[in-house]
Image 1: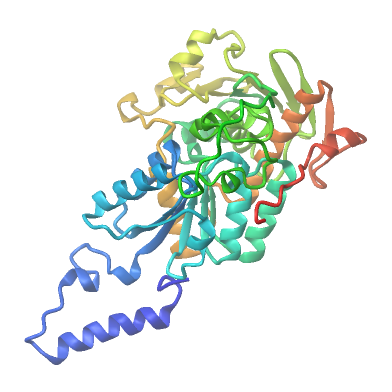
Image 2: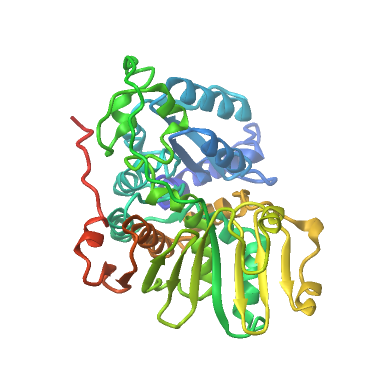
Length: 436
């Protein structure tokens, strides 16, 4: 780590600056160098590296660039046009040309001055890149899904604990006010005893058809081997690197169930105060996957477009993407990415925040701020490795039940399916040797 934890270096730099100022009135040290007048001394800034800079990463990074105590210093991406676009964004923000570019993210991880990384590659890379970063001594903010399989989520969480790294899963809705308020109502008892939770997801899909082979570009243009990474080899096609990998079993997570489920199931876990466990039963149907917790609460993973109870699909759309609903025996609350909260009975609705203060569910500002604050304090983030592990495994277990089209039982302690070898086989995938 750099000066954030290296107190000797930091104290030396600050002490030298102070001593120099005191020794000679003719030598003026600008206040910004010492971190005064609201500015942050360079030695106190968190040096951030980026691994994979596509559209979602660009959205995340724009929020992170606003923090005065964080400085993006390097970007790694296998596509030349993306890393160049990232450099333009960063350099324009800082008014210089200092952002360093890498094709291979391992070279970025070798940079000792980098304190933390944002991992925003495709799903196939999230766990492997995050673990390599942790082993290199970096704290990690990883876009979701953080692991493409149950085994990947387990190994990632274990590695982060072993390396003692700060980690934030990119399930930012844990830090968005309307979702926090809905969970607060579920915890308060004002809904009565919780009995049903609804998590919206895309309709699952299984697809592994190959696109037609195209000539492989020069490695400095698109490093196809590094793009594939741990995923199985297949011939290059430009549509893959442009985003057509989504929905492909080799590249995506849990039949696309984790695209939204990593958020919505996670919020249901939180509402049920089940961050230390997960559902024990998973039963698929054409319209949903019904899961049950040991405490009797039912989790309904609704496929996109399916109504919540007596609510119509249009009502869900009005609330925005990633809607969730928490139902108790005395009331319910429902919310989504547009920031609106709807609750019954009417007395609950009257107690909800002013709609003019809405924050959209995609906003990462508070979530990333929590990550950087925990880097400084070495505290526990909102979406820490254990929270990620259990909510992601619940999603993967539901996806496996849908793939096999049968009811599955899961031991939440062993994180294994009970009496089903085929389901247990799907907890992991073979990784390709991309280092060759």
